[in-house]
Image (cartoon, rainbow, N blue to C red; front, side, top):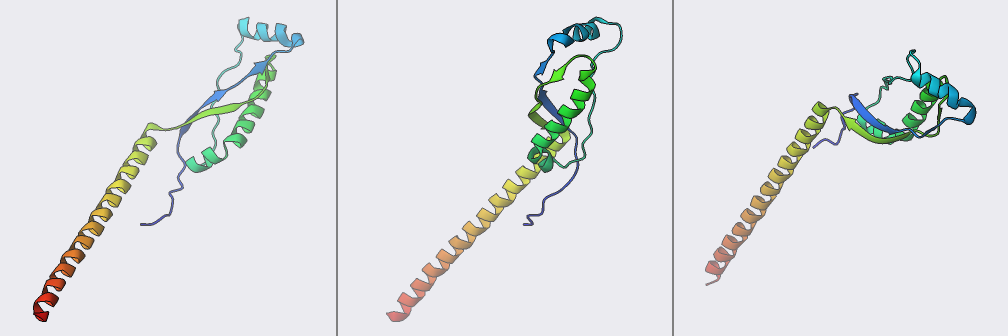
Length: 140
């Protein structure tokens, strides 16, 4: 079985933890941005082109990039982002289903390989028994 890994870009959603501060001098600005008719902070999709393995491996780098972008956007509203933590990375439902199917397929292959080995060893044992019977018959 090939150990090559599929390197494909997929959609993931991430759960972030964003502790933030509003400095004393910025509290008024922060409150105004929340209560004003002008749009305040909004969610903004961030597109990163990484495969799933890289997404998990580079989680800290991604969090830093997100933090920098949020800091730029939120500072205008009086918020200071203290830290950005990626709490969870959730692959798209289709990807999770495909990954489960791959794992199930691998398990079937391993089970079949085990059966083949078992039958081979069983056959080998029967052949040795028969050979022992033939050898015993010849000696008498």
